[in-house]
Length: 308
Image (cartoon, rainbow, N blue to C red; front, side):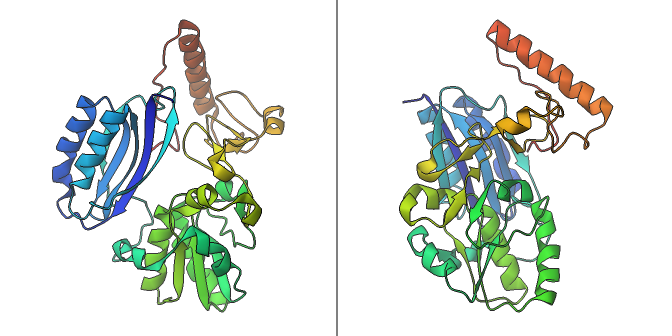
């Protein structure tokens, strides 16, 4: 088995004194040789960490000791090399940014749908199925019949929904996302908007792909993930996509054959999004990555556009 454990975690809970927990969590992680990013906010905790088994367990124990975090939810994967190079514990206004105040995601657990019940729920013709992920994620896979809001960031979701609601009759809503955190928060938002008949997929797409047999599945395509796998399919088997190291979007072999694809610098999707100055910086970073690889070293690199 691979030596490095990768744990993606979150918990919505009231943490009014969240800033006071930062130093202790960071100290535990550093002592345990665990790297990654943890976000703390009044509404809870969110993050992805990686390290040796005993180290990850120590950090998870520290997080579970926070108020309301005894039932902390996390998902594990394994790798031969730590995908992170630093440990950061950041203080934020939100653990997943929506930009809407006075909603309570901690109550959304009341509206879970277990993966084995999901097919029945979304097959109801009166149920509006909404994908709360960003457009580039939806582009490589989604549930059959789901609505794509075509958002570039989760912050755009409230405005999209309010406009959509003005133009459509909404009876029942079922929402989903990659691992559960965005659809928990969007469920709280819809309830605050007066939509009471709303549910979301417990554990997100990843739990569905892990537990529902492929022959029974209503999922089509692959699921984008925010780690070195890029995408996964049923049983969480590694998918067929690579990733543009400039914009972090998924790319295919056909994309890499495009004249607009330059390793570490651009892909057909983001070719026109960056300035020449940014592209030169990306090219220099890619050069340093390649030199480090040739020396058998790890290149830490610089913060990029979509990096947490």
